[in-house]
Image 1 (tube, rainbow, N blue to C red):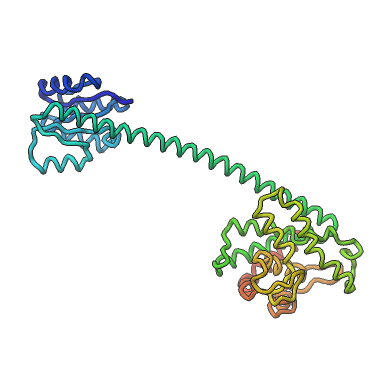
Image 2: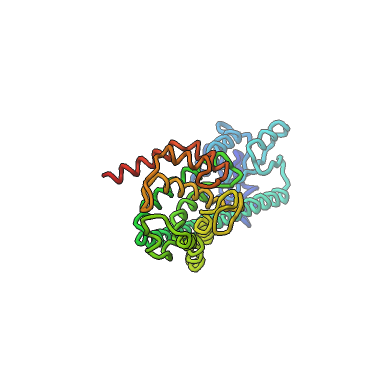
Length: 367
């Protein structure tokens, strides 16, 4: 606790009287002018409980001391109590403009001085204690936030690892899936960014976009449950085979539900929505649940267009690749089922970005 009082007065008798008044409770130091006072304040900043300052002194007066204390921000940490024979209201107002703590006129009452000094010291000590507690709590919160961020980063890495592992399992069953997954992630990001900017009502912030893009890698995870004879068949599927192929949405959802306690809830929710609903259509003619319009989770709607576009412009075991122009027309004119008009608008706006991404992957394949 700071317990030193500095008395600044050019009159020795005033210094002696104030020392006598305050010496029982405080350690009292004295200065006979402003210059000496400033030197002492600079050396004793951490010890001073209050400065009792006279205004009218030769050479460096009280106002000059206040100027320096304000300039060096000492007055914010050390309370100043003016004790002066100055009687003008103008001078008093000027002192309070420096944010002094109190103003006492000479001649002063001993008991009044003692009481006011005690009040000022107690108030500033309370403020210092409060600031110390706030600082301590702030540091505690910073440390807690650091730990929370570390945990969040670890959880995010865990989510990513789970997705990569499941994606690798799918790729081992379906040789087309590896690059298909990466391309779908790219198309998904393009569409999601555009939708977020053009239609803020969907509430897609950057963090949600990142989750959707990452989770899009699991849209076909249910294919690991489809027999090779159907999954790898180089030709048109029979109605019975197609019905089996369609179950990759529900089977994938079941797989993700079974591991839901091993990863972040938001990742699990979005991954499940994408996996189960990426074949739903805006007019309700999709599968497995026949959802209509925005009954279909927006994450699944975004991945649906990305998935269809990539399937069209790339060769599959059962078909040749369509030209980019033809794929664009087929999607926008409804030949691949009905999509959200807002998403189609984004698809039109980002046509060039889709085509450039396709070209970049073609170049990688040829290297």
